[in-house]
Amino acid sequence: MKLYPLLCLLLSCATMFSGCTGKSKKNVHTVDTIALAAAPIFCADSAMQFIVQQCNFGPRVPNTKAHLACGNYLVERFTHYGATITEQKADLMAYNGEVLKARNIIASLNPEQPQRIMLCAHWDCRPWADNDPDANNHRKPVMGANDGASGVAVMLEIARLLQQMPIKLGVDFFCFDAEDYGVAQWEDYTDDTSKSWCLGSQYWASNPHRAGYRARYGVLMDMVGARGATFAQENYSLYYAPSETKHIWKLAHQLGYGRFFPMHKGGYITDDHVPVNEIAKIPCVDIVPHTNHELSNFGPTWHTVTDTPDNIDSNVLKAVGQTILQLIYNENATL
Ligand code: AHN
Ligand code: ZN
Image (cartoon, rainbow, N blue to C red; front, side, top):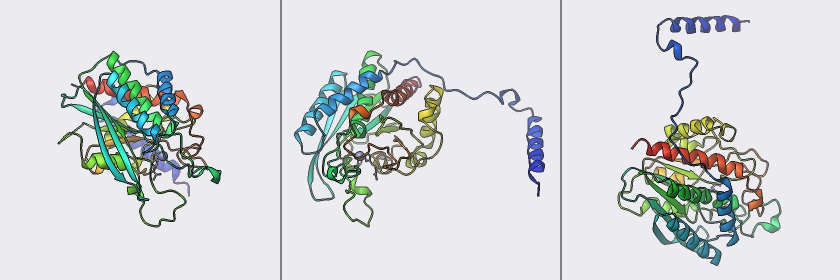
């Protein structure tokens, strides 16, 4: 039955009649745009260098020398860019019974300003490349150029630029530890393993570094540098921070990075934004890749020994970094 043409005719009539109400007729072809405050240019080469610097310490697996040295480096860099550092040290029990000497590093700009936003990334590396196609690599640590270093590098570059062009808004850079010690793939767990991930952010959300800490919202950046990455709208983000999520994606499109930010749902990803949303009750968006690859939905280097700086694409860092930098300067313009 050819109902289709009839349906179309009815729909177009409805549209025509609604057009006769006289409301917003002349705006039907204009899309409302986000006003852009003056903002610096995000330097992707600089962000790339911050990835290389972190990786030069070796895999930053908790309880290793590389982890300790890189933590000290992050404190030194954020201090150099004018931030006030709060370190949270805690002994956190991993699922396998290991006690992790964990260290959340929180770097605050304009610490007295009540109007704040939070940027987050994890800085630790996974102790096992358990998604590597070669089983001989499963017990080797992950270098974490993308999974760890990339988000921190984008934050460091933003901190560097904020020192050059200061704002009034408060900005907190959260370097969460012990994100990536989740249950290994070789274990045969049948129960929920989600709490084995994100130990540092779970700790912070239950023990905030300042009593009564609040922020307007947060943005988590996890694995924001891999070649070929695209960032669908993550489902917890859409659930807990719908307006912020849609706004960031719209901003990215307006800045010309639409090909990295498809306007559709990804999946529910267990990540550091979940405790921020569910325990600290601060709306937090996760920018995390959703890539249909046979090895993993996070891309071919995820939890493999190939997660190295040579597989980072600075164009991906640029798309994420410039979008979040613009977001910050726009937020500052509302004060
Ligand atoms: C899960 O694999 C359940 N979540 C991903 C969290 C993660 C690991 N992010 C980076 N590495
Ligand atoms: Zn990981």
